[in-house]
Length: 239
Length: 342
Image (tube, rainbow over all chains, first blue to last red; front, side):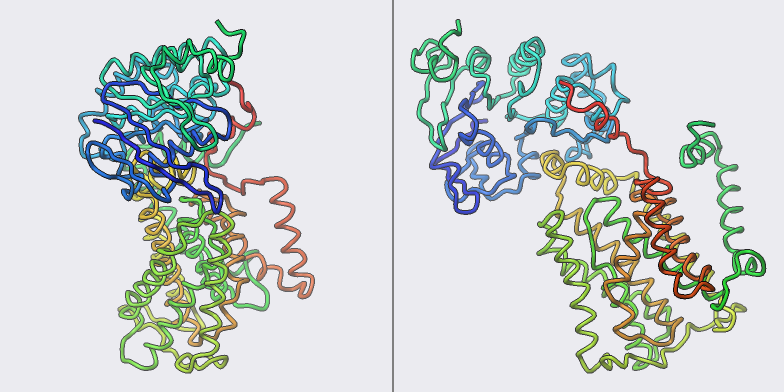
């Protein structure tokens, strides 16, 4: 289940947000896309998941060009995204949110209980709050819910958009630990992050995005030790 | 009693009842509503306008249209400011076919509904990719276009309208009469009940869940695999069908249709019924339609000040109950209070 993006261009009106980006995510990997605000990270994910149209370029998933497949059909193919920030349904309960994650697999009803159980093992907090409205959860719990809901679709590749955004440090560590756990169950992960330190520690490979271009591609551990990268993305004081 | 809430009170009784009790409640309520045409002697009587006519139009027809518009605005969260267009399509279908063919009202009904739905799909396909304000503007334009077309083409008779539209044929012993409109009321009541039944069935099934997801977060819905465009068009088209049905019956009751009956005002007024009663909650919407349909005729004796009082009631009620008289359950409200605590 290889995901490959070839020479992708994305425009907002006349402004070019993604200027010919090519990335590869191999089966079983955690690949992270790091970069500053406005580098185009979220646009990349939205284009891969189909929420934004690409101006040109190809998105190849499992050997098939999916650039023209609508977003809701990409879920069927095994591409699932946990949207940025609080992309959960605030007026639905935790359970209803998770059930929505199965919307496209409705004809496989026997999966529901099984997958809910898996999600609750991964996120015990969600089990305590099944009947609580999504909008009343804390930021960290909402993030857990967004990831759990994406997993309900049984994705082969999981796209995560800034899972650490707005969370307390302890919660961030918790979320990243769970991301590694999910990856170990065989789910390939493309992770977009501003928190470069955490992302590079967890990922296998990384791409650095600057104003719509990939400026660097390397093994995550190499970037973690690269002085220039440390200077720009990790802060000189980071250890 | 401090936290008394009519909606939850009603829902609670319903939850605690078993099936026979529920059936009994439904039959009693329908029976009571069906007796409404006989309740016009006392306090409910409307001065000047005939009570039995008022409870058919505006009251019952407003309720029907509000229920239809609520599918679009309340269930799936799309602001439609041109709902009158579907009402007009239904009414003109009745008018045109009623005088040019030998079809009767019941035979024209499915044609009117079908044409309204067709118009819904044709408008929906290109425009439902738009969101929020943009959609509102386009639908507003559509409502006006239908009216202006009716004003200018020859087969609608332009501003003179179509007159001499036949009344519905009698149903057994039930005779349609203009000086006693009980039977019209019962027919609209039956249409309202069918609409409620349809909405309730859809709400607990896939379409209902898809609409709910679209209303709360359209992007997230798409990411869950909800074909959002398809479900939005469905919602729009079902709303159109109800509007078309109301239009056919209205044409056949009024015996006359003309473009000036289908102005933007009607769209706004129906939207007001939905918002005033409680957007998204069918019981609230019904209350809204009843009050906003009935009130102007009840206070007709104060003539010129009538609209002033009507507006005042709207403003005061919306101030005290911004979510409407009987709002839907708003679980996400806690989100606003708690704010972004992460």
